[in-house]
Image 1 (cartoon, rainbow, N blue to C red):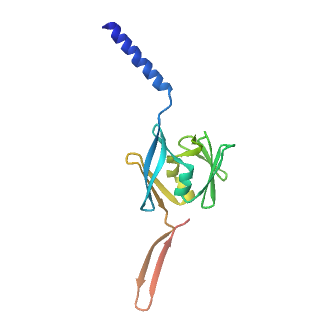
Image 2: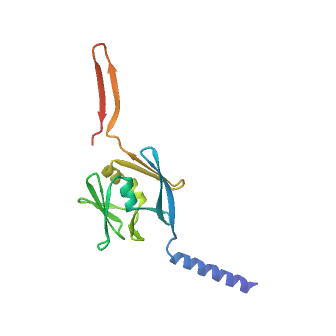
Image 3: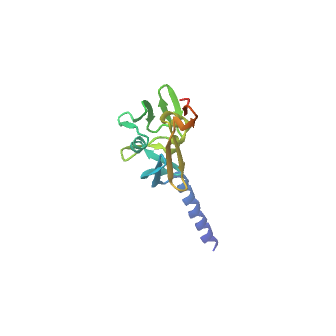
Length: 172
């Protein structure tokens, strides 16, 4: 009986050691997308451990940008609203003009596609570049992208001799 417990303990210990050395499992995840308040369908994301990744091609499509992929240098460029964001494969940094941004994880390559950490799209820096706010709920697999309004609601005031129209503008 003691030999059985020792062998069982040894097998469990060896299994735990192997699990600690192996990389986290990768999975494909299907995300529901809400774009500007309307259901836009589903997209496939990539998941490594607890980190979700979005294909650069899909990001370009969702944010109305253009993606350029340079496989020889390992560089991905996302152009949105005339601003360029450059990512390097296996790097956790992105460059916007002369500013360097920290990514939550490294950019990955899978099946000849570049994958950018999904959390980056929810940062304030990215929101300022694209004028879009992004929220991701991993429990419900829901990605919500809303365009920021630059013009507030239209208000009007009617008087006896005239009507006054008020439009509030953002400071951008």
